[in-house]
Length: 484
Image (cartoon, rainbow, N blue to C red; front, top):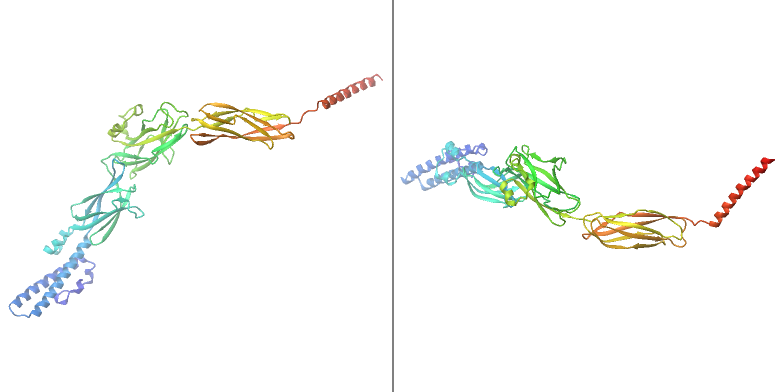
């Protein structure tokens, strides 16, 4: 029942601003309730003395009941309006198993009961029974920017939240974010959302390191790159060193900034920036060594150490660190794994790719097949595409295997057909093989063969005799002419 519904007999009137200024409306309803109660008490005494009828007493009691309900409704409206739940602290931290968590401190910020009692002079059983310092049924969940729940549990409930007694809730993050929206529903259905920037647990005081590509395979002679996400927990303004331990000395390594490609050895977090990206590039040697063996995984660690602490840790790479020793340092670290792989490389060397022959001759040439890779080549096959109607011969056509650095010779023969014409002909040489069941293709070669016509010996001799005779005749003619 609203204030407008209170009958005129209570001696009050409705003010349209009571709905806007509910505290003043409550004060007006309380005064009406007190007046109706006194009137009812007076009428009850008169009834007991037989001065008024039962109907008059019932009418006065009805007015009192209406004033009481109106007062209760006004009181509840003010209490529900003044309920306020807030988040006083939101801390993000990481557990030992690597999962991210958020610890929320939830507070009842209403705190209006003392002010109400002082303003309205309320100190009765009704006010105390309504428990104005308690917010009931507080439901809290964490959302991302798309309003999707990203916490486990999806929604947490606080049955009672008392003023001055904050409670803490812990959520597991299903999506790693630095800012989340805290959605709250409480009381009579009041809903409130706050977007909060998550604090980092300063007690940890280190940089947490993560890598999505924590385990990789790389061929000998190539480079592997590990992405790193660095997240600061405490230590604002400190400088940190990036270090690698347990990596063989035969492997070159350096850190870089993925955005600028600048090499890194130290870095620091700027104000309000708690997350950075970095990358670790690792270059493998061309050949397997004692420390870098093919198909044998190498496990190592990336450490993020405060510069002050790093000065006391000399020669980090000179020894093999155990996990317990790294954890004892109380620094950020991530365990990475690299599996060196080898791959054969097929190279075909041809001393000569241009040949001249007569129609009745055969071209014979040698090819040197070399494995310049780091793994054995298997089933090396040499194939040729000779000109039309030419006959080819490859010895051997298939080489069963070729170890790294080994080479073998293959002999090719090309025989032209009997009716071959004079001119240039080309033959393409292709080479294929397998390395660790992966196809390896060599560079194609092209052989050029020029067929020339056979020389006519008798015609050549006759031509020479004619030339000589012509020269002798000219000399004799000249001598005779001079004597005359």
